[in-house]
Length: 275
Image (cartoon, rainbow, N blue to C red; front, side):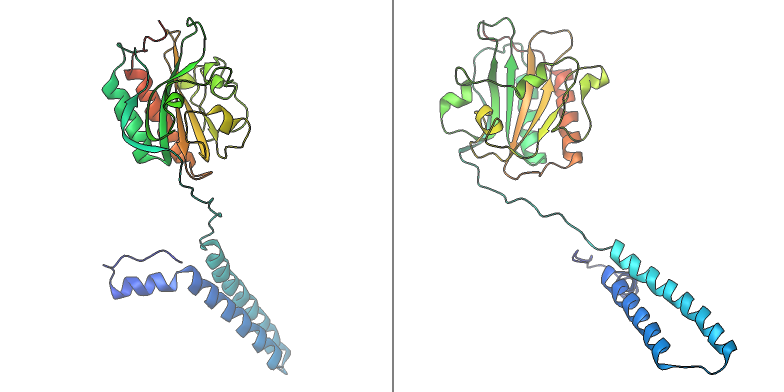
């Protein structure tokens, strides 16, 4: 195994670890099978009783050596090929930037803590909070707060270009939670009450992902969308996370981000925007 061993192990513990390692198991199993095969080829017993006895011993030996070999195979570290990490284009902001006025009723310390936590404790390199007010004239999404690697153009931080559709982000407006594809790690589902689910795009393709997420770095490799809303409020919010490595969000990462979004939902009042 390629994993490093702790430095405070005793000699006996190191010996046991060596004997039970995947490489040792593969070596011992292979040597055992080869020894049984050579013994079978070079020795020719004359007595039938001895031949029958040796056959039973060889059978047990093959079973034992095969078990050791199988143990070594199952303990091999099989790792999938990791996608290449890219340097995101944009400016790094370690503080949370509020890009729109309004939101007087919003608990800003809570939002800032959550966005910084997404960037520090998950594969995300960009975290953006957006809101959608159905009573506003444009009835569209507006970036409210963000941190991490942000677009260099200030206009892209504060608004979505006119005419730009948001079919992926609009999934966060659905009440039936019927989202197909691109979702891993289970469903948020409004605490399993039929609300919208999180949506994970492990690889952002040219269309529609990289075109729609104008508030993320232009070369973002993946995106995770999390609903942040309350059932008794009309204004919907969502958190969009962008990463620099495709397929880097493990199911446990998605689950953790979902829990933070749920915590944010329970402790954040809906911002008053677009008035």
